[in-house]
Image (cartoon, rainbow, N blue to C red):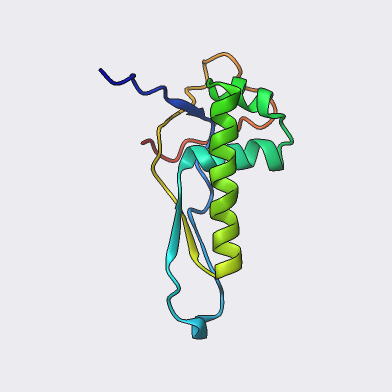
Length: 117
């Protein structure tokens, strides 16, 4: 029997969910899909300057899980930037923060809910 999915807590959806090269002459080079939980680790660790341990507690997962999510997200960002691919942010195993859960209201928790998974 497979393990049940452990949902990753995400406090806000991205303001924009599509990024890519501005030069229209370059032609289609493909795309990269980043999940919402991968986006959340980038936001918390790189922008909000959380440690991996703080990020894990905030997302309600193990630190090793955050480390794997974060490494995958960085590879996808690099592929998009270096190879000029469009980056889409969508999907993943996450639940939006309800605002009443413990940990909400901390720095980095915006509770902007534009939709759900």
